[in-house]
Length: 293
Image (cartoon, rainbow, N blue to C red; front, side, top):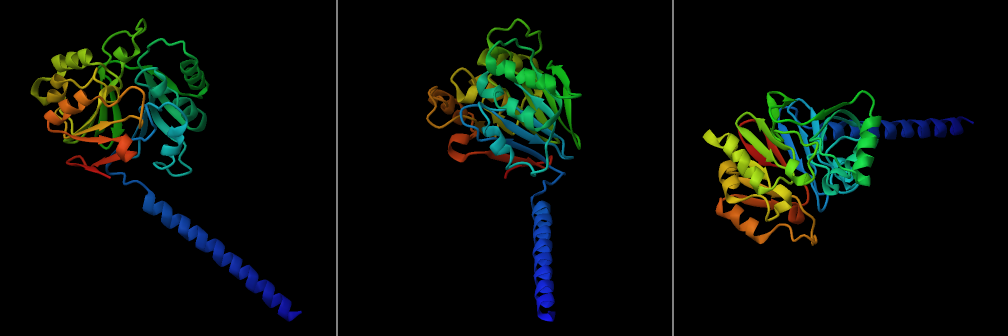
């Protein structure tokens, strides 16, 4: 009888020690992988042929710009967020094309979202309708139409300025032409995100903001996945990026990135990074320098 009690006690003690060890490991793991909340993080997610960019400000404010073509965005976000983190301060749809907006439906279904920012371009596709129906169900969420002059505060002095659109896009039929352009700034560092904005509108922004280096950015996400219709020489010279990121899918049917676009980027002296070759591409800024993570 005493021997049975001893065995039972040892089993209980062993189980308790295993449970405690698991808890300790989980705590250590969480501490090791918790983001530093004194830096700006920008990650161009590997979601195939499309766009999705995760941004976390220095104080932990979280933004997702576009959601890619499908639910692969959830897979990539699971690598950026802790398992219990189910909240976005802001979701941005640069424009309502499937390869940018479709995955946002899955994000709305699984995350709490405070604010949804989009350009107000009408779209009647089933994908777009699905996203906007899910957005409408989000309790207490603000739905905002993007306009030039808006400043989105990311905490710790970081912010994102809306450079485009500067007009009413409610009658826009060429969805790329109304793409939201964000200039993300932290201290002396910055990132330029342009959706699928075509070159004539890039050049229009050069006319508005190209003086005194206002558009200059450490990192540029190439417009329209490196298409020949974006990232022209005038725009590249004004932004003068050190690194250009191309978000595209391997073997895509569009031929992205276009060889002429790559040549223009190289002529500007920028280094090219592509999700095709590298998967998710992440950067961190301390407000002074940008480093790849």
